[in-house]
Amino acid sequence: SQELEQSPQSLIVQEGKNLTINCTSSKTLYGLYWYKQKYGEGLIFLMMLQKGGEEKSHEKITAKLDEKKQQSSLHITASQPSHAGIYLCGAAPNQAGTALIFGKGTTLSVSS
Amino acid sequence: NAGVTQTPKFQVLKTGQSMTLQCAQDMNHEYMSWYRQDPGMGLRLIHYSVGAGITDQGEVPNGYNVSRSTTEDFPLRLLSAAPSQTSVYFCASARQGRTNSPLHFGNGTRLTVT
Image (cartoon, chains in turn orange, brown):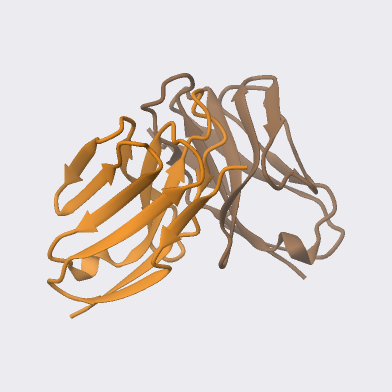
């Protein structure tokens, strides 16, 4: 079965610093999704990538999907306390886009 | 639109009790799914449905039943609760058949089984 591995598991950065979170799949991805979760709350959709080489940005967050569609990175520029939370990558293991699987998450803390 | 609504938000059960976690969406999404989230385990898929009358098992289906009689509702039933089912449960929905449709999540139900 397909697995998604996220690294690092946790991250503490100083406010204003840049950071990168990685998501690696054991198989080809048919859609890669990034979500953010604050403790005790639901998941908020950030971005979706579908094509190899695709890159999307929203405010200070940029996500990329590599050409082979087996790895994605999430980059935050000039981190702020509001960026703190758990970041999860999710992927569709089939072309129908059903039965999405998720990585175990990366916990980000931003110190001021 | 309310989006995906889960009830209750919190629930405490005793071992052996049964209950139903409710999930409703008002976005006319064909696809609905249930996940559980446990520390260190991430989100694991329990059951999913691609439309009314159609359900399928995910990664961890044992101990749970689902049905999909309408497009809007996708309840999750615990037949005989066990302490191992203590978790946070999330319901999610999406448009079916379009790979550019992300999952919309509810706010979760925190279940404790004693």
